[in-house]
Image 1 (cartoon, rainbow, N blue to C red):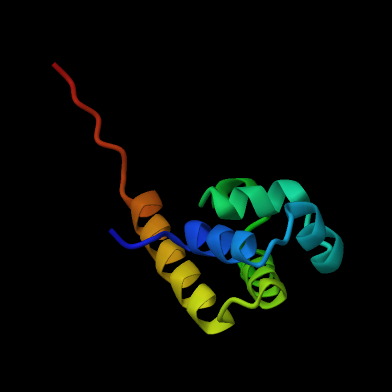
Image 2: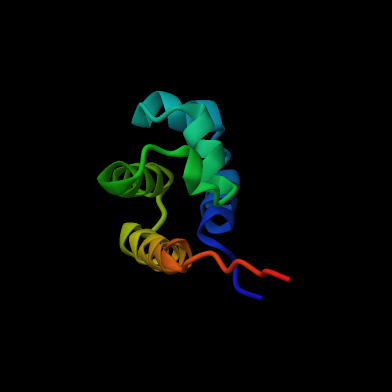
Length: 93
């Protein structure tokens, strides 16, 4: 099974021996946001262009391919938009 974006970023960070606090300090991204990215929980992030910027900065700092990270993020965002746009189905007896 392929790794998610968050798993790829966490793995790259850990392989390089970089802590979350180091990433936060150097990128000026909240440690909470970094943990959310690693857990693929983008709902806690501000959204839009900010999320892309966070993913790009994080990937760049840890030496992960920024293009791959942004591509993976775009796919996730598109999937989540499709799911969010689907109307709720109400079942009545």
